[in-house]
Structures are given as structure tokens and as C-alpha cells.
Image (cartoon, rainbow over the protein chains, first blue to last red):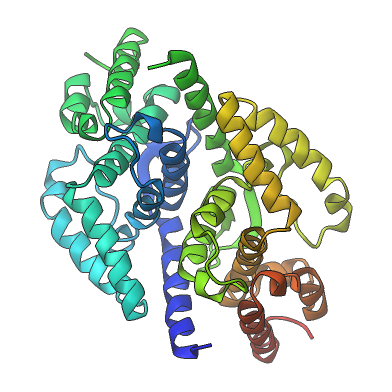
Length: 197
Length: 197
């Protein structure tokens, strides 16, 4: 056993415990509190596994999708969660996250640093079917939570339906059918009075 | 798109949000609070991916390991978290968890219900290299957290080293080298005065 290698791996494992401290703008289904990035990452991995049949491209590599989703938010340990409707904070998001990826994945042994960095970059670039499907799932989950919890984050931040459509329509690049389903949810949310038209 | 199928999948996805409400006896590295089952599930999946080279059997199916770890704690939504040192609560754990698996995986369409139930049963049976490795990782993570946070749960529950060894030695079935590393951590924890001999 290479003890330097294992100690690098363990240092990374200890460091990423901090993802449990990054609180998102999404509220739980029961609306009692916001969820953490670690909880979100777990939830979207279950979704990605269950819903892969709706990916636009058949036979995508679901294992790769899950690995992307597993580590894609780790950069928020340094960069913080960026609320998608916060235009000011979104401006330098890429730059903050790139620096974070360099520091945090840099804790790993070289081969795993390269592997994790490549997964993160593929996800960010949105050029492969796996990245587009992963992104669709990542984007759908907070909408689903908002729909189920009575629109907590929409109400708190005065978000209206056209803003949701504008920031989430890219979902169609990964899954037309999940985007269609999501639009039906939004229409229903308007009907229920939990989202403004 | 089969709308009955999708609505069953979405019902399951909404139901498992409750895993974010199941609080474990493990404290975060910074000792500020206990972690949730959803956070734990995410953390052990990162560990399983990073540390697979230490599995006793070479070339295990890491994707299967991750799927097992992704869903293995979902039963705790109904059955609750069972603290491994709580002998009274451990007694009927299997029975409580089996009922929970039946109800919760039963929300899914038949093919996915079978797949998730099979993954959960394989994990529980501990007869395959993947299950034994997954279990070793699942068992190692709370020890690692306790070591890093100054022994919170050991102190609160007056756990001594021989109890830890007795309940965790099965780790060696999945990974001799990680079990060896863990024993070194425990020796060091005793030296540091955060675990009683």
C-alpha cells in the first residue's frame, strides 16, 4: 500500500465533508429547511439513475453521469452556492469555480486529480450527451422540490414563471421529455397559485 | 412517454427526500452537528469511487457498488437509523428494514422495483465482492469522521476501542488494507486521548 497516495485520498475525503455545510436555496419537500449540497448531490444521482430512459440520446453512459453528478458541486466548498436567478453572483461564477476545482481536486493523487478534473470539465462544457443529461437532472431537481413544497424559493425570491423557463429551458438539450414534464409542472404550479405567471 | 410509469418514478423521487431528515449518530468533521443519511450516502459514494483499488478483489464492478450505496439507506426513512452500538435497537433492525424496502421500493415501476430490491438484498447478504467492499466503505466513514472530529460519538456514547474493533472488523472482508489503515487510526485515536483503550 502506497501510504502517500492513501493519505492524499484521505485528505480529499476529509476536505469534501465541507459540502455538507454548503446550504442551497432549495427547500426540502416538507419545507422545514433548505437542503445542503451533499444532500442535493445524492438526490440527483438517484434521479439520474432512475430517469436515464428519458435522455435524448439512447444508451448513454449512466455510470459516467453519476460520477459527474457525484463531484460536480464539490467546487462550491470554496465558490459557494450560486443561486441561478442572482445575476450579479452568476457573473464570476465560472472563475470562482475553476479556482476551487484546481485547489480541491489538487489534493488527490495525480491520476485521480486528472480523472475528477476531466469529469468536472466535461460536465461544465455541456458538449456530450452525458453532460447534457446530467445538467437536465441537476436543473430539474430544485424545480421539483419547489413544486412539492409549495413554491418556497419562488415566493421568497419573487421568481415568476418566465424566469424559470428562461433559466431552465436548456433542460431540453438533455431530455426533451423531462423538460416537457417540467413545463407541465410549472403550468400546474401557476394554477395552484404557488408560482406567478 | 408512459405517464403512469413517470408518475411512479416521480413519487419515489419525492418520497426519498425524507432521507434528508434521517439524522445519524455521526458528527461532521467540524463537530458542529450530526450528518443526515443523504449526506452520508453521498460521502461514501465518493469514497467508494476513490478507494476501489483497495478492494480485496481486483476489478470489482464499481458502478454496482455505487448503486448499492446510493440506495442502501433509503429503508431508514421508515426504519430509522440504527446506531451500531445500540444492541437493543439492532435486534429487530433486519425486520424493520425489510418492511421498509417493500413499501418504498414498491413505489417504483415493476422493473425498477426489482432492480433496486435486488441491489439492496445483495448489499444486505454480503456474499459478493461488491457488497463486501461497499459495506467496508459504509463502515469506515463514520470511524473516519469520529477520528477527525475528536471522537464526538465515541465520547457521547462511551464507546471504547474494543467495541469499535468488534463491530467493524468485518471491514477486512471487503478491504484488508482499509481495515489495516482503520486500525492504525484507532491506535492513534487512543494515543490522542479521543478513544478509550
